Length: 420
Ligand SMILES: *Cc1c(COP(=O)(O)O)cnc(C)c1O
Image (cartoon, rainbow, N blue to C red):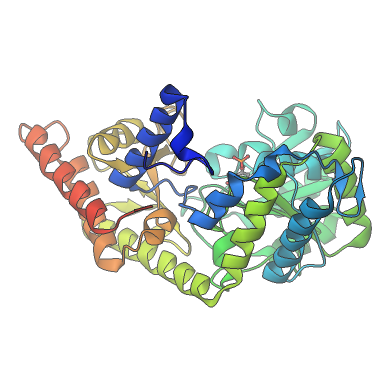
């Protein structure tokens, strides 16, 4: 089987399950992946993930574990911590969070108490669920207040300041899941200082660009920073927490374990170490540069086609495309594009008139396909294919348009092989 399934792939007996893994490999190989939060990890990261480190219980931290036999997993975790600190120029790091959401929960657990007020970006304006959305712990256990963007699609710092003064939050969260522009972390710091709040920056999406110096780093402004490791940073699925404050570092370590999590996933931490080493290589900077160039090229082409891009463009790997000029909503668009082999997600636009399960936009990102080696010309081509599908939706030629585009996506994928 062509899939990556650890050391003993020729001895597999669970045909049913491994057929699904193999099918997933083929799906990834044959689709144009534009989901802005996804990427393709290296074979070395996959190897570490499929390693014997998954067998080891290692509650605690390197040198202070609850079980014996941790000397080798300690090496892995220490490498991950040291490399992460080097990448982001920070003093303390916790690499144990199982995901971005777990990292965020741990930070809130460390900094605030149930009933305290937190101020974060509204989900429908580009924020993340864990920044105070009603169905999450962040929304249920805290008094969550939300800020947003203005009509131009830009972060409304005056609103942030106003809400901070009015509600005096314990924690202000900055960072987003579908905000394409640069965030002014210094401005957030000033607002946080003016009301005595902690500043918590969640760089889940931008981490890879920050490492390459292409997006501002919050390290000199935020009290605490969290990130996922699997988006632009191109590591295994997981989370991390960083700070320069020794007291907060201690609180955060206790919040992650035993506060929120039990035993860390040592195979994932090993894979994080591998990915951080890759991100320290000069080639990663080149990669991030291409991610940004490709993202801008794709957004510009869609503008040339006549579509509006929320905020007028992008400073990052992602764009939000406004579809109101077309006869498709975000849900239909994402579904139709999936049928021709282009994967993306529906996304609300500022002051969207459609409900969140429909939306008037899509979010597209360049991180994954740039890993496959696509350049500006190919991303311009992808923008053309997107426009071709969406602008012909419902017309009599639509079925044949879809067949043409499907053939083009397959040939693009064949030209830039994945895990071959
Ligand atoms: C993706 C994301 C997360 C959550 O990451 P998970 O690993 O899915 O839990 C948190 N914050 C932001 C801003 C994100 O974009």
